[in-house]
Length: 321
Length: 306
Image (cartoon, rainbow over all chains, first blue to last red; front, side, top):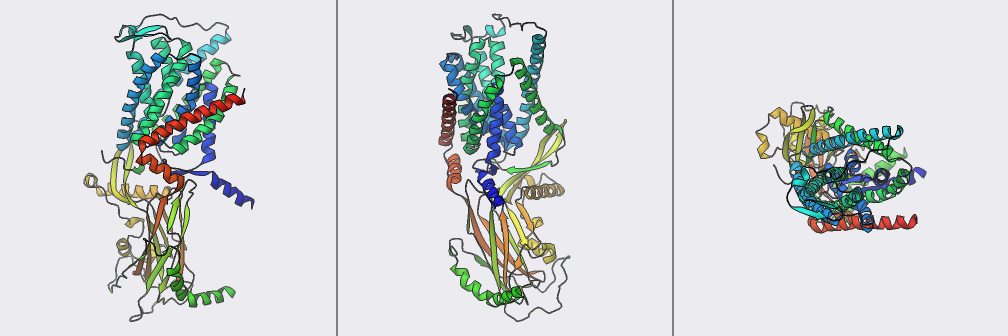
């Protein structure tokens, strides 16, 4: 009787995903959303770079993982963006330039997803992008955090970066005045940064905060007080546009899967924020860097190790190319 | 003893019972009414090099009544809903004019093939390109059965020779799988064979190509037989065809076709159709759901934590 009941519950927990077209255990994906939510709450990151590879490892087709990931990111960043806006931490003008660029990048990215799926190279492209970006960002963060931890232990104060220096960025045309950031710079660099992030969003299912935040600080010299709010502003709108575009062009947004991940993620994030408050900034960055590099190595290993099966089968997508 | 006597009673009435019950089954007269395939004439020429020797020395019943197989499926329509975890279908049937001496079977062989809709499929092969495993070649097959299950009284190679099996398209080796026009001439035959073998191997790994050779079909009387086929949770949606073949001495005596519909139903159907027919609205709803759930969660937790 007990086993019968157990079986019944196990069956109830199984849910058929309408777009991924597979039966999965709902509890498993809720738990996964929860774990990623915990980490994103802990480190204050979006978590897309963890969630999308995890979904692919779990057998979700990579295009569906990427498309559904963008929907999950909208949900997980919308409340943060509104909170930042209320605290006046968003440079709306800069945000609009970033969003405009981001939507252009996303349109190009979603189109490229379609072509790559047709020629059977999408999985490879996703893996290579992840290895490149996670490797680079993880290594930079690791070096920076190790340096910060050393300085903190030797008692030296962390030196603040000098601001107000002029670089090649300031010589470009289409200058605009960004009042909230106290900047008078060309609109081209923020638009390009936005476009690049939008392109990544479409191909990798990430918000792109880990690229946008350093780019805004070091290239545009946006004050740190408005960087987080402005990048969240961009992420919400660009990911919403990406979700829409993926749904229209590639039909890879699984609402049922996204809801499981959103619910899990919201719960996990609450615990993550509490746990994050107990750790020091540089320790957190060190742990995050280690995590990023681990994900990078795992994906890289799959690329170079000899697969047990060199053949794969798939449906024909949009005719022959 | 009890079992045997019960079986004998059953056996005596079996054909009659089936003939009465058969047409009276619910849904039996749907649009997908089973159709009878004309029984193939028994050729007198021996076919196939690996044909098994006849197990009895009795001459075939020469001028007696011809055997005919009739079969049906327990479920005419399988519904794929949000809670779909697979479905077991029962294929049952009877042999008209059965010459079989007892319910132990062995006189006839029955093969049941359940086949899903044929769809185009791409097979890709990876190779090592500068240390990275990349898809470097692919073959598109114009139509490959999305699902293929065989159940039989004995392993099919023991039942009939390859030519007979080929003609009836029974067995993985005889699945009709032709490369799309552009691919036929760009590969060697052995390469195409490797791609074809990969399809069968991968489909088997996914649980979509299945063999039930040991007691896949069992006799429950002199003329009654049954077989269960478990459709897995990942069975591709689309109509299924259940073909039943009656074999004797390596030849097909009679065959029968029944159809099963496999459709999306409920929320599952709603979401899938919405996503594919109205992608713009679906995308907008997806964004709306994401925004609302994000806001709802944050207001809920803000209240919780004060």
